[in-house]
Image: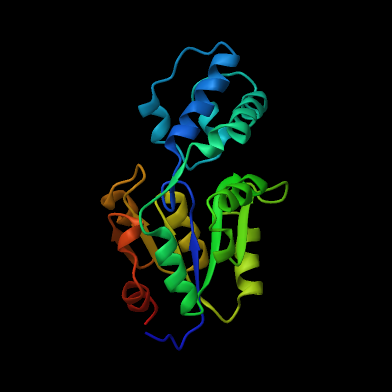
Length: 219
């Protein structure tokens, strides 16, 4: 299948391309324990994974979130980052998309340097044309600076956003492009589609992504 349009697909990372639940939850446990915070049930944390760490910590304690984030990242950077696995068929899908000259990117809530480190560890960094993560300048997926990066750097491309979280759909809405929602995170099909202002396609998991589905959203 050959595409006449220039296409850019932006992927979320956590629970879209990778399952790093173990590493993330262990990092939260470490931070909570270090500061003497009572154990937090993992089910209460899981439903919030994908939003900024500051917002999550503020749900459970009044302790300065910056200290907790530092503790979280100390553990994650040394151990948690390696407690991860790719979802089935990810490399094959990325290869097929690149073979069609489709540009691929990452937009994640992780710190950018951590996201790059993780992509390299999983040996998929080479497939991506850019990685956007948290920096001093960019604090969230809906930061208008991201819109500027897309519109100025890829002004003649059609965009698709792929992710498991409502914030991924909000990114697609900001870019005014289709959204592909995967159900490997903590949002249901209804949550990812209701009141959407853009086209939405729901997949059970990333292995169901195909060139035909991409084509159907672009044309």
